[in-house]
Image (cartoon, rainbow, N blue to C red):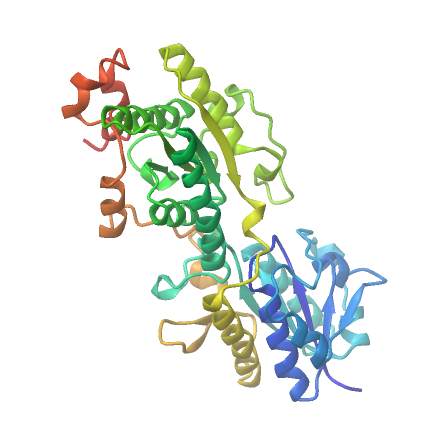
Length: 405
């Protein structure tokens, strides 16, 4: 019976998934393997009647530069009691390749241990993907999809900024990023936005809606002092993940939660929340300033990968074959800054509690500090001029809000 590899995708989309799938298919087909794509992630893999894609060169060749995923994705996380080896036996699967986040990887480790206990020999290699760039890869290497998502965010973001200039409006933009501000930081700094708010800034104080709104108003008033009647403030959705539950509950916003206990932020427009709270505060202050909400969310996840991710994802796909040929299993494929393929293991990332702490923006780096110092916000020297707009300018002093003084 011919040997096979099986590919599944877990979590949410990221540009470059099809590049990985295409590369895997082409590489393993050349070596005589059947390449089976399984729709619906683990739900499909463990079902009695899975929906499959049997790859040939032509299918693989059509998809490598496309956004999205040719395999339907799923966030389903099976329990140990859901495991079975039927699919692996039926198709003589020698390698399971998972494309996803750390939940997808840890589930695969549990599943392949079970399958191998059934007298089968199945290897596993995981390809990590997230547009959030928050997996702590060596050399601070980016996760695949991040640079493409940032590129698309900057394309949209520049258009939003042009609208702000053209109409003398303010825009409140919210950008994806479950727990880290990499996307927001990259987009805001590239687009020369007047204000950027990411969770890493709150390293010396609690995150509250009031502080976020006051930071935006600090920027608006600083611009007015300088004769600038427009601007964009970008807030990373990651601020929600560091807020205390009481702060979120008392805001009047109702969240639903996914299977992994994460707030389903996709069900709520973050930019509308921030913009609404901003308008309430501006009216309290008697400031007649128009602002509009813009969400940078799902627009970023399925666009066609840029050259950087096409190259990285091709390398990772070929890298899976290299590790498999070397007999390495139960690992994450990684490419270092020189392009060398190395295996990483979940235990390399886990803290003492078995959790993978997210890689955050290094807020103390020259890069971060230089960009932050270049934002528009009220400082002590602005208090006198700011009094024409604010009764208490010191409450809007950016660095005092963050307790950075």
